[in-house]
Image 1 (cartoon, helix red, strand yellow):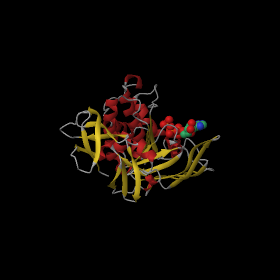
Image 2 (cartoon, protein in one colour; image 1 turned 135 degrees about the vertical axis):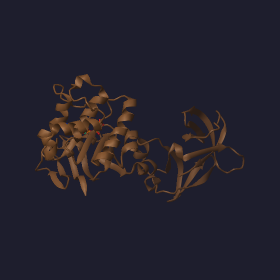
Image 3 (cartoon, protein in one colour; image 1 turned 90 degrees about the horizontal axis):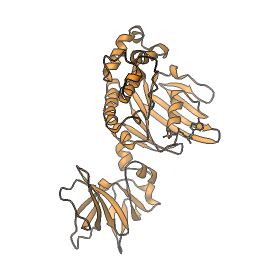
Image 4 (cartoon, helix red, strand yellow; image 1 turned 90 degrees about the vertical axis):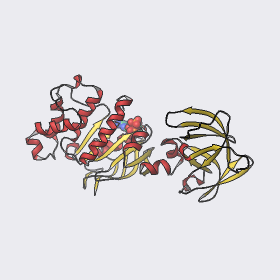
Length: 350
Ligand SMILES: Nc1ncnc2c1ncn2[C@@H]1O[C@H](COP(=O)(O)OP(=O)(O)OP(=O)(O)O)[C@@H](O)[C@H]1O
């Protein structure tokens, strides 16, 4: 069962192709993050799902119903979806109560009990987002974090099947963002509502989503679990865009053996995952935490590196290691730090 589907969806604005044949399916209760650089089409896809735009081609399905194609369009209020935007979009002349209760009047699929007892329902929602008792305040009397909680309560009050969130935390400060992430996860667990969450912040996507859809130039570049996106990127773009990557230079001897160019000779690296997307580039993508350091021992036959920079980060050390002509980034939790110019053996664990 799906909460939302885009089938072959394209969207053109004049001669700009914002989306190019997108296929996306979001399961019941699934938390999907749309991640990608500015202009890749994330917001356009969300607006098509919401019903603010019509696709140029393809179909949109919400809750097993075809809600849009190039000839027909079911309006947003009939789609049973809640929405939260970066800008909060609260009505300034309405109290918190009136803002949150509003969808109970204008949405088309509202359980009768909520429509008949809006006070109780709004109070429950405000409690869920940590704003119990604030019904009579106006938006101008709230902090940024509180406004976004009101927007969240308003988005979920009518029991939507799908929640669309467009960069909901990007106007909040760093500490509040971390706190709100937990609250969004909590709400997701409590309600079991499917969420499609647009962000260009990879740590939000990695930290919260069940599945990440990485977009680029109006297309889906890769979709998968946060773990798969991070450790099994299928293109140089994903390897660079999500987290940091070293691209080790060498040659692919076969599908699982990368011959690392190391000074005069080569060192074979056995790779346990599919890296076929990188064969043509003759590189091996390696995360900074997939490299391990040891003091160098003559005759070890390993990869020789020299420490160029070392930064203490609290729980871990961040190193730049010179290997031949390249500089690799390494993150380790080694207790005994390595010093500047020290020779180390670098183990590649992929
Ligand atoms: N109403 C519009 N008219 C013309 N072009 C548009 C319109 N809306 C979006 N675009 C273009 O479509 C492309 C995708 O835009 P979109 O807003 O979906 O990207 P995004 O990934 O959400 O970017 P950001 O992270 O900066 O918000 C961009 O090239 C944008 O300029």
